[in-house]
Image (cartoon, rainbow over all chains, first blue to last red; front, side, top):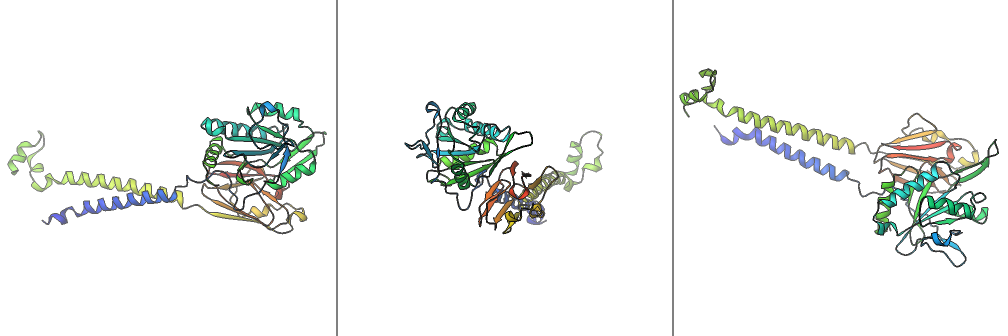
Amino acid sequence: MNNTHHHSPLRRARRAIAGLAALVLMTSACGSNDDAFAGVQRQQRLDVADIRLPDVTEPQARGQALVSADGTLEMRAAPDRLLLVYFGFTNCPDVCPTTLLDLKAGLRGLDPEIAQRVDVTFVTVDPERDTAGVLNIYMPYFFDRFHVLRPDSEQQLRAAADAFLVSYERSIDDDGDVQVAHSAVLYAVDESGSVAIEWPFGTTAASMGADIERLLQGENS
Amino acid sequence: MSEHELAASAPEGISGPNVTQGPATSRPRSLSRLAALVAALVVLTAAALATISVLSPSRTYEVVVPAGTAASGRSVAELFADLPQEEGDGIRLVFQKGDTLVARNDDSVPHVIGVFSVAPGETVTHRFNVKGEFIGNCTLLGGEPLTVIVK
């Protein structure tokens, strides 16, 4: 009996398995998208470098973002740092505190040396009720160091919101209570004053943390 | 090995004729190896199919906000009609991880479309890389919530 012919079914089977194994490896490799950011990366980044807002943070809690001599914070990150900006209001019952808690958890999951290169900034869209005192009581629930920004006028707030494409609307309901609707996005601003990443509400702490770490390593710059 | 030797080495209770056919002695081993290879083939085929099925469904969806939408003051939920949805409050868009949403705003004012804002004349393309439930509002829906679910 021909020996080669005798073993051909096994060899064919081995070849088929080898081929399938290669296919599995190839398709797995092609499908891997672990290098993608979780947040939204805009094709044409938002430019917010010209925005200045009054920083009303108590000196002992102030982070390392760029604050001018006139007390306004520049919307760009300090060198080798990342500026995170969130528009919200302290009476917000759910979205704002959830986002800030998620961010806090995301930063805690990072190497402290990386996390300390992040400046968290909270811009109130309800400046009438969110006084400097209120803001400085609110933010320490989430962060040791931070910046709270309170626009001096509606025009100033509107200009900042428009630059970030933030939507907000205050109204009085039938019970006389103030209702504030606002977009719930957390922004990462780089040294040039452009928005590198936008995280929609619902982004997990781990995803935010991973994106932050990569941004600080120079990716997406 | 002779037929007699094979018969002598057979276990008790097994009659001679069943174990005395020379060629049959190598067949069980070959068959078991073939069976093992076939089993491996089946497992690998299933893995390959599963991998391909994970990759293949990625799709791209597009939402275009027409010019004059804000001025019309009307809710335009029908803009999302072609996108996969599930029942619930407001609009609940359902995507698979890896799907892409392209949002183009031909209107004269910015519009929030669920998870991002789109400036006038801008097109934002976002690939949903992470599973989760992302909640936003939508200026197109008159304040109705717009939730994006990525599975």
